Image (cartoon, rainbow, N blue to C red; front, side, top):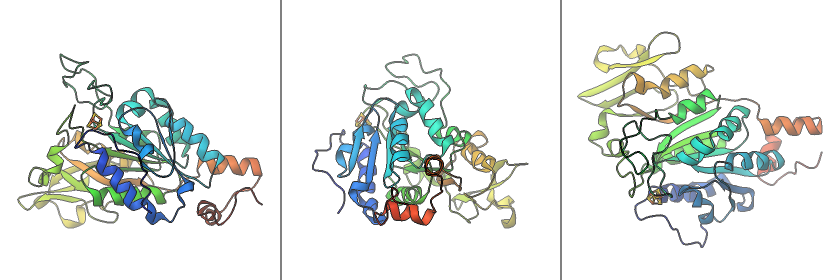
Length: 328
Ligand code: SF4
């Protein structure tokens, strides 16, 4: 089973959404879940057509409120794997409030934010992630808005899992989505998604092998953080309490290179990683920034109601349909 529905996919030719859909349909069956235990909830926008194309349960809901609807679903039904599909306009503008509360509560929901830095469905207005100076139909003289850094926003809301992937990088995307699926609690994944119609090439510098040589920092748990081509190699080093910066690797002793720890107890570490662009604007880390354990809102609510906490082993059995949360 690949969980493909019989609906005709109606995104524009070349849209980055296709790769994300294809990746999801490839990796989701590997989780061992029954299709009736999977739900995709979306808001409004191009990416929000996603639930139609999955042969699972789905809900194309209302603008910015997918996270609120998914919260209710996750609290009521621990036997479901709940995913939110949203865009930069849907979740960071009208839906910003619901997003940050889902993350701070650590509701067991996976949020995939398709970031194309533009409003696509309404034909090309600047969004909360559009860069300063961007000329669009709604900002003909150039945007004067300071954009959100979605990962820094999620980390500021105390999200327990935060990752970033590129639409064109199927292997990297699969790795982040798989880890998000395994994470118990809120998982927030920003996906850089090309919109060839209204913001074409927004992430080209990261995709072209030569151009990206000095830019892409692939995060690996337990791995020293170095990146770049032979002639331009960089290392991430400490910069005081909780801070990180980038240095020419040839001037850094191997022991001084920071080893990536997504389970680092201090959120400031992941935040510093998400804000590396402050000291080195061109660098883009991709992978898993943060993955820590904290009680989830939905488990806590159910424990409060039933008077007993459920073990994580039993919750896993409930998800796989081997046990019922209603019994006992
Ligand atoms: Fe994709 Fe852009 Fe077309 Fe929307 S407008 S479907 S984001 S290419």
